[in-house]
Amino acid sequence: MSAVRTPPALSQVMTGCVVLVTADRRSGELASALARRGATVRHAPALTIVPHEHDEELLVATKELVASPPDVVVITTGIGLRGWIEAADAAGHADDLLGVLGGARIIARGPKARGAIQAAGLTADWVAESETSAEILELLLDEGVAGLRIAVQHHGAGADGLDTELAAAGADVASLVVYRWGPTPDPAALAESVRDAAAGEIDAVVFTSAPGAHAWLAAADAEGVTDGIVARCASGCLVAAAVGPVTAIPLRDKGIESIVPDRGRLGALVRRLVHHYEVAQSTAIVTSSGHLQVRRTVALLDGHVLPLSPSGLEVLRLLVEARGEVVTRTDVLAVLPGDSTDPHAAEVAIGRLRDVGGRGLIQTVVKRGYRLALA
Image (tube, rainbow, N blue to C red; front, side, top):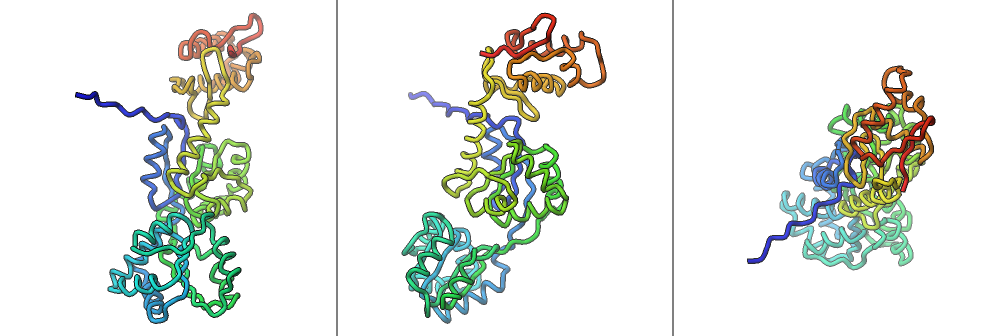
């Protein structure tokens, strides 16, 4: 009888990090993936999605498309195509819609759109591997679109200029918005999230759509905390993570550089964020007791959380920032609560750190103070 192999535990590299998820759709999946890596996850959706089943405009546009079939259909999102077919099915028009799509040249904006096309029993004739509407626009304009009827399925934020540019080039464009963005379901939570991000209570913010990023930044403007958020991002204290380059555009417009995965998938986004913290771990200060990192709320020694009080954490942060240089007793007293001038209080604080991190973590420099014992 073979032994049952226990799968290796995931690295808890994000322990002590508070991550804000701004998405509405699939937020639970994203939160679970981050929590498995040790993160504390908060949720404040910047927008909500209006269900496509109740969007009468979509059904009217679908009937018009069936009556006047397109030459080209552009599918921009996988979830959009699935929702479109579901909405048509609920109204009894799914077969008609699939017939129209099957008779047109289908262009997909990326692998996710192509996957949804294949799942519907259709075939994508061309795929924009960059997952951008700009690549699709370049292709169609180079080929010439004058006189063509082109249907563009896009999400609630619009078609990234496709409709306007194609119409200007002489195409007859039919726009189909499969799901629309609505206001945040919890305005108080959204407002609190931007204030906390500016105040240093959040370590990373995750964005899964450009409209969501824009709405979150608009909430920051409304609360008057945008400058604080931009400053924290610039310093590296706050990490912005975007699922793809399009999602990153509203952030970049505000002067915020975000980390973006190579592929626009939630799993890839989580891996990219985890990698960011793995790199931070690898560049941690190396002491004789191991790799030491001091984060906003916790300290980790070789990946293990040290059981420190808030005051102990501040003393350790002081020593780490000194990078092996001597820290005086007066310096230690300055970060402890209260206004004690008793050197014994500094000695007690250092002693507690040694009890937690090992006797070799901190060295006493006679008549001068203390320093980390660097490797």
